[in-house]
Image 1: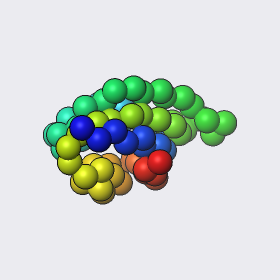
Image 2 (image 1 turned 180 degrees about the vertical axis):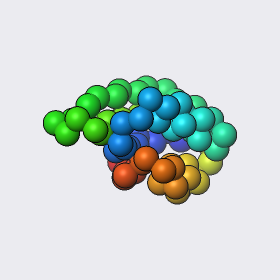
Image 3 (image 1 turned 135 degrees about the vertical axis):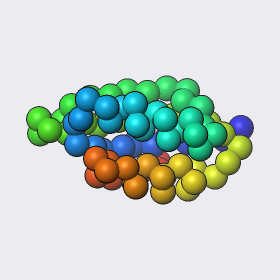
Length: 76
């Protein structure tokens, strides 16, 4: 299995974490590690996660960017 590190920036909404995790699961990825924090701006969150799968990480990153409150997704 390949491991990938993602950095996701999003507007804070009570359901945003659930939406992100649902997309990760539906695209066939497994979360190995995750850290979430709130940057200086009060209405945003920063999510760092390590995911693993046999699939290409592009399948996941494209779907995450389509989520309404996600502002950016970076694959590290």
